[in-house]
Amino acid sequence: MIVYTLLAITLFIAAFSLLMARRCGRAYSHHRLLLAVSAAAFIYLFGTWVFLSVYVKYVFAVSFICTLLYALLWRPRSLAKTSPLKTYGNLFFSAVLLALCLLYFTGTTKRPYHMVHLAIPLKHGTYFVFQGGKGLPANLFHYGLRSAIYAMDIIKLNSYGNRANSIFSTHLQDYEIYNDTIYSPCNGRIAHTATNNPDNIPPSTKRGPTNVNQVLIATNTCYVFMAHLRPGCVFVQQGDSVVTGQPLGCCGNSGFSLEPHLHIQAQMNTHSGLPWFKEKPLLIAFDGKFYNLFEEIHAGVKH
Picture 1 (cartoon, rainbow, N blue to C red):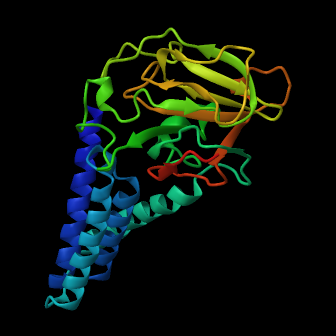
Picture 2 (picture 1 turned 135 degrees about the vertical axis):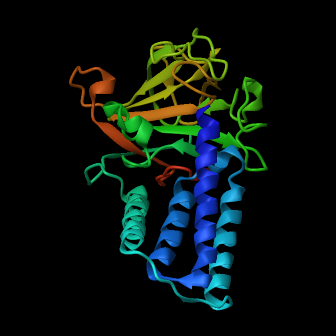
């Protein structure tokens, strides 16, 4: 199961960075310190903490800083004799991890970005960017779908920082975002809808990109596509005019989806006659702010 594998990797790298930080006091070396810090920074940014609770990330950060300070300031230490192979190995992995941390913020796509400003399409609670970013490595899954390189997958958090009632559940109702109302992020016209596709029951493999419930909004400048809606819970029809904040449907788990979430992406509308998904992709800003991978979105009723 991919969820348990990703969580195990997160916990392993976190434990490794804590161990390396602790050993900096007993046998101090700059390359070991660099590896400890780079591993901690990497897993803080990219770790799938949300499978437990997003708050565990902050507990880890405090634990790492305290462990490192204790090791450097209070534990007796001496310069360690390290083989050149281990030294170069530590430096190599440190460089890779630090490069990935830098790319988390910068991405790998061309700049300047073409951006569209939208309202948050969800209203009540704290949400979480499960996939998103300016290309690799943050938006790894969507990057392979060239029309969706800036797409976002959004889930919802409960008061404990969990997205569901367990690490992985086969019950759709256990996921916090399931059946949440989705609101129009802009004014426009409904260009297409689909509503009759069934929800997947995690971890069903009988899914695909062509059986997804969806809403496509067209404006004078862009298209906004939202997917994985609940069957029978799309409130608009093709040709309808919508305004920002108008209910569009409810979040489900239809289409190519492992668990309930909202997929949203935007493309330019050049009025060229091309299918919407072949137009240039747009980076999305919600209420003037861009959200990266694993960042929280605090949504209220104000638009």
